[in-house]
Length: 190
Ligand code: ASP
Image (cartoon, rainbow, N blue to C red; front, side, top):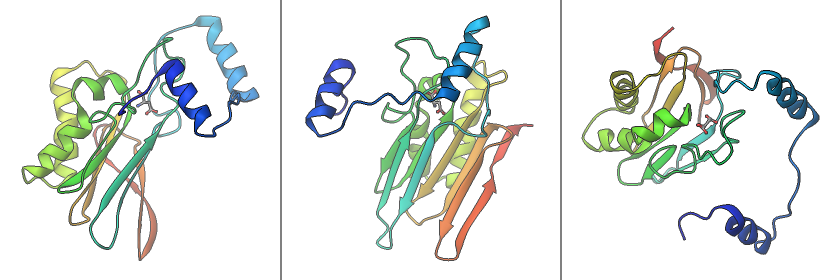
């Protein structure tokens, strides 16, 4: 299997030893109840500077791996699938060339198959930073992105990294033998 959904994934997870639990916190419940007062379907970018947690790594042999996890967009429509679980949209890893991960408004990322695009651009010779910027510029040129955020992070086979976001405020963490630092991504609009 590549992707399981709904009842099928629940059954599979239980068979694998996971336990079903309610992850709703009192804080989230209160904030959802407040949102219900207006029920406005209007995602706000950068509430916490990021949403999806995306991780890219390279080992000493140059092997690349990546992962991402998200709760999806806050107050999303029932049944909505975001970019994070879609291979090539929210995450893509090609151990021959590099990897990319996305955060922000999943619809903008899915329509442009963003993470695959970043890796494909690196395969054609672009640096991770230039590839992330070009993937954001495709959104700028083709989609209505008003007040929305998308951030891409990428790493290539040589360990070089890059990032670019649509809107100011995308921060990422870089860890190497010399330590960990927080980096402010370059962006299209402030
Ligand atoms: N990309 C996610 C989505 O659209 C939101 C996030 O960044 O967590 O579902």
